[in-house]
Amino acid sequence: MVAPGWIPGERHAHDPQQLKDDCFASIPARRWGVPQDIAGAVLYLASDEASFVTGQTLCVNGGVTPW
Image 1 (cartoon, helix red, strand yellow):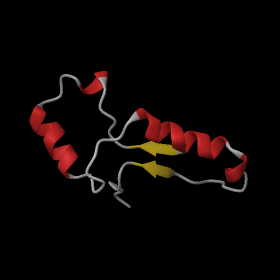
Image 2 (cartoon, rainbow, N blue to C red):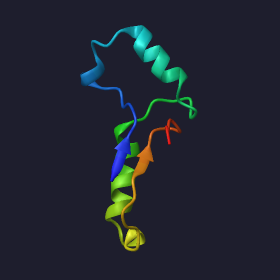
Image 3 (tube, rainbow, N blue to C red):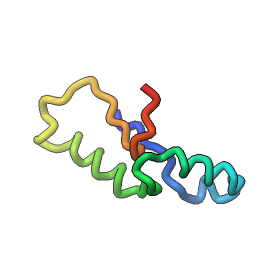
Protein backbone atom coordinates (compact mmCIF):
# COMPACT_ATOMS: atom_id res chain seq x y z
CA MET A 1 0.00 0.00 0.00
CA VAL A 2 1.17 3.54 -0.71
CA ALA A 3 0.26 6.06 1.99
CA PRO A 4 0.81 9.52 0.51
CA GLY A 5 1.39 12.71 2.42
CA TRP A 6 -0.24 16.01 1.57
CA ILE A 7 0.17 16.67 -2.14
CA PRO A 8 -1.08 20.21 -2.86
CA GLY A 9 -3.68 20.36 -5.59
CA GLU A 10 -7.19 21.45 -6.44
CA ARG A 11 -8.50 19.62 -3.39
CA HIS A 12 -6.62 22.06 -1.13
CA ALA A 13 -7.28 25.24 -3.10
CA HIS A 14 -9.66 26.64 -0.49
CA ASP A 15 -7.84 25.45 2.63
CA PRO A 16 -6.82 28.26 5.00
CA GLN A 17 -3.29 29.52 4.49
CA GLN A 18 -2.49 28.90 8.16
CA LEU A 19 -3.35 25.21 7.72
CA LYS A 20 -1.05 25.00 4.71
CA ASP A 21 1.76 26.78 6.56
CA ASP A 22 1.41 24.50 9.60
CA CYS A 23 1.41 21.40 7.41
CA PHE A 24 4.49 22.56 5.51
CA ALA A 25 6.34 23.31 8.75
CA SER A 26 5.81 19.70 9.86
CA ILE A 27 7.49 18.16 6.78
CA PRO A 28 11.09 17.14 7.61
CA ALA A 29 12.00 17.06 3.89
CA ARG A 30 11.14 20.80 3.74
CA ARG A 31 9.26 20.58 0.48
CA TRP A 32 5.78 19.72 -0.71
CA GLY A 33 5.22 16.37 -2.29
CA VAL A 34 4.37 16.21 -5.97
CA PRO A 35 2.36 13.60 -7.87
CA GLN A 36 5.60 12.19 -9.32
CA ASP A 37 6.68 11.21 -5.78
CA ILE A 38 3.63 8.99 -5.44
CA ALA A 39 3.95 7.68 -8.99
CA GLY A 40 7.55 6.64 -8.31
CA ALA A 41 6.48 4.61 -5.28
CA VAL A 42 3.68 2.93 -7.23
CA LEU A 43 6.02 2.15 -10.12
CA TYR A 44 8.50 0.58 -7.71
CA LEU A 45 5.85 -1.62 -6.09
CA ALA A 46 4.62 -2.69 -9.52
CA SER A 47 8.14 -3.50 -10.73
CA ASP A 48 10.13 -6.73 -10.70
CA GLU A 49 12.44 -5.14 -8.11
CA ALA A 50 9.58 -5.32 -5.59
CA SER A 51 8.53 -8.86 -6.44
CA PHE A 52 9.49 -10.10 -2.94
CA VAL A 53 7.95 -7.13 -1.09
CA THR A 54 4.70 -8.12 0.57
CA GLY A 55 2.34 -6.67 3.15
CA GLN A 56 4.01 -3.28 3.44
CA THR A 57 2.77 0.27 3.75
CA LEU A 58 5.10 2.65 1.93
CA CYS A 59 4.75 6.11 3.47
CA VAL A 60 5.55 8.73 0.83
CA ASN A 61 5.27 11.86 2.92
CA GLY A 62 8.62 13.59 3.28
CA GLY A 63 9.20 12.12 6.71
CA VAL A 64 5.86 12.91 8.38
CA THR A 65 5.40 9.38 9.70
CA PRO A 66 3.45 9.12 12.93
CA TRP A 67 4.49 5.52 13.74
